[in-house]
Image (cartoon, rainbow, N blue to C red):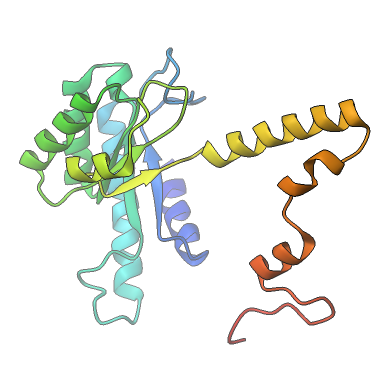
Length: 216
């Protein structure tokens, strides 16, 4: 198990990833905004983080950058789903333990109110001031729709929108299919489409010209 954690960190780093999540749910995991989740033991999660952190340190030392001794090779974000299983105090205890095991960032999943986000950030930073914090802004779940500016004012460094664009896209797909069914043509939805040239401009593609990485 822990050799796999180590290998995952190394493979992510070699692939160019800037960071990765490590979670404390039991397999098979559930969406963090669903009930019925179960957690692995805190001790087991701590060991996973320790192995991941050790791999990250070794990667940093093996790099040729002058700041390798102080800059992580890859950011380790430890996610805890404890809020919905064991309560907010347990989530704080687990988060502190994960940071002390080597995680640079904490992802407290399933927080339900602005007060919870604020208190979690305040209380965790009172214990481990240097920790980075991630907020998950997913729609139709337990977290209320919250502006990035609010998360920032509460002390969160990163906000993710894991399903937002998929939901927007699938909503547009559903409406477009209904229009095609009704009108028998794509004409009513042409104005909503990205044109061919807009796509080429977006991906920096010229037909007939080899598509290569810049500087290669």
